Length: 267
Image (cartoon, rainbow, N blue to C red; front, side):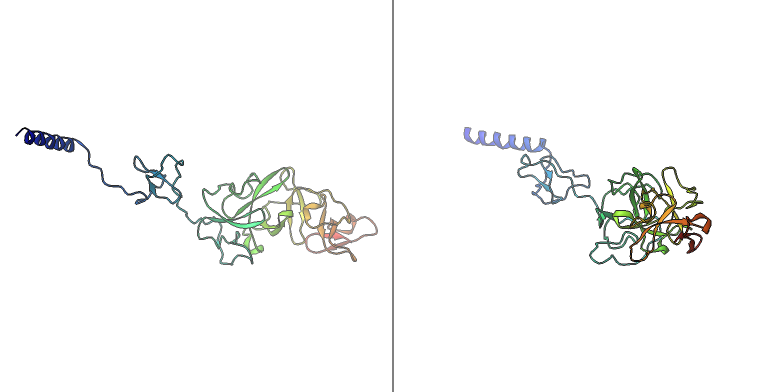
């Protein structure tokens, strides 16, 4: 009789404990996903697979859940050109990236994800960063700093009147020149402080001044000093820095001014 009473007391105590405890479901290790911010229930941690795990939670630090990836489209009108051969995407068209946006990093077109930049065309930027300029723009190093330029494949990608698609120095990236109200390649006026006005053969553009003078070999217009431009072939030589002119009176004797538009070269 005493044994029966003892068993009943144990059973009633168990019921009392059960009634006072909170209900907890049986959570399976890795059986559910972390929240977007990487959170899990107590006793679980978010791992690299984006799921909550309970085993060995003290063996490794928390791993945030992978962020959701969203496609980004630049403000400028997009086009449908495919990426160049060997490139992952086309930055001037923002094509080729299923997620994020296309930018040139270390000379290679790359799909970037995360938070895109907000700096617009012409704004000062850090050339060491690929994410300060808005999608569709490149931070070009120049004159000791950098400015945001629009990617392009041809002049048709440069919607602002007077801008042209040029190759950006050693980086080899094609960019639209920055717009300017007036730029005189002979008087060297109309550009921001620290820049010089160059004649590209079809238009003028503001760029950092170079140091090469007459007849020095060159590859880009901004390698030449103000008043000169990298152009053409002279005899058997490659492209050289030629003095820009509008008339023969601006050329040293015995050279004359050969016009190729609004400007010309002393030849």
